[in-house]
Structure formats: structure tokens, C-alpha cells
Length: 285
Image (cartoon, rainbow, N blue to C red; front, side, top):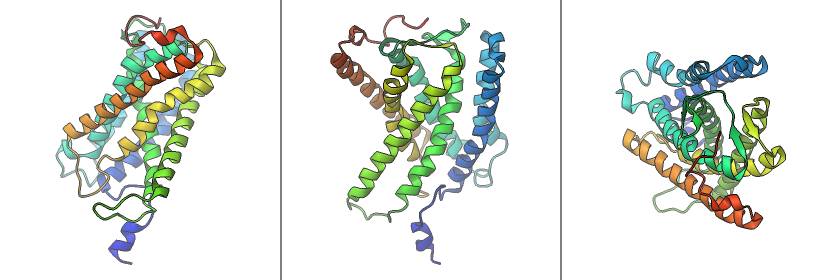
């Protein structure tokens, strides 16, 4: 079989060894942190948690995404500078995107969907418990590690295009449908699963599941395809500065979509909260 034939075969994991290893690691690690988090919730041990305990929990579930690949690099990374390793770029992209999501976008949930946090903590940043910034990192890393192979499997069904060649319409439509489906499924499942934790106060659960999930999917319709582009081809290596700018640019797109939602949906429903700029003022606790 020729190298060209291999290249054109549909595949799930990256052909770039550094990226393929990191994707698999993030996927293998996901059941571990989810299991730990699930134990904390089901056992209700979280009822004895306060600032320090929640902060430690956030560190425990998120730090392995950085510490393990740093201490045990794959063969493809051992001779690379740290800033050229895919896992570094992936963590940087998710860290920036997740930070902006927590710091700004969560307030849209506070105001438009009447969903707030009631955690027994004082260690907060812009009304968001600091521990959730770290927990979000683990969540988002798992989400994107799981969806990138799905997108790649579809994209790799099409042969590489020549310079200037247009994308097939089926590729464009298929990508839109797959991204939208993955985004809504991810948003709905997270919204549905957090109901077991009473510190997530949701005024109208049915509205949150349907409308809230649709709003939340705006994050992922942008982030899933944008994140998948990092080091996707062997001949194109992203720098840390490009990675940061791409993440921040993606976040700005989501920010704009969130505010368009406030203006458009708020106007349709007549909700006076739509006149409030969610990221200004105090709304959470």
C-alpha cells in the first residue's frame, strides 16, 4: 500500500504522533477524573467541602492534563522543546477559552436563564468559584479530545484538496450538522448531569434543559472545529502565540453570539433581563 493511499484513508486519530498520543491520553484520563467527580457527587461528600476542599478538587481533576504529559512525555515529544509539544498548545487553548467562558459568559446564565451558583465558598473570581475554573479545564479538555477524532474521521473521508480548490458542498453541510449535533449533545448532557448537585441553582429546569442547552451549545459550535485545527497537519506547527490568539479569537466569536442571543431571544420573549449586560454588575450569589 502506498503512502498516498494511507494518507487518504479515513482515520480517527491524528497522523501527527505528538497529537495522536495526547488525544489518546486525554481520552484515557477522562473516565478517571469523571469517576472521581462522580464519587464526590454520589457519595455527597461534597457537603463537607468548603473553600480549600473545592479548590483541591479542582486541582486534582485538572492538573493531570498538564503534569502527566510533562513528566512522562511520549517518544515523539522527548526531543522537542516544550513549547512545540501538542499537549502544551492544547492545554493553553483550553485554559484561555475556559477562563473567558467562566469569567464572562457564565453571567449570561445568571441573568437570562436564572441559573446561579450557591457553593459555600468565598474564594471566587467575578462571582465564579475559583475551583470551577479548574474543573472546567478538565471538562473542556475531555469534550474536545472526544469530538476532534469524530470530526477528523469525517473530514478524512475526503481527499486533500489542491490549492484554491473549493470544499465540496457535502463536506460543508456534513461538518455543520456534525458540529451542531456534537455541540448540543455535549451541552445537554452537562446541563442534565449537574442537576444532582444542589449548589447549581436552576429556577426553571425544563427551560434550562431545552433553552439553556441551546444557548450553551454556542460555545461548542465554535470551539470544536477551531480546536481541532491545532497542529492538524504534519507540515504546519502552531506557535504558542498563534495558539493563544486562535483561542482568544474563538472566544470573541462566542462572546458575540452570546450577546446576539441576549438581544434577539430576549426581544422575542420580552424578557426585561435581556436589557441587562450580564457581564456587568452583580448577579450570582
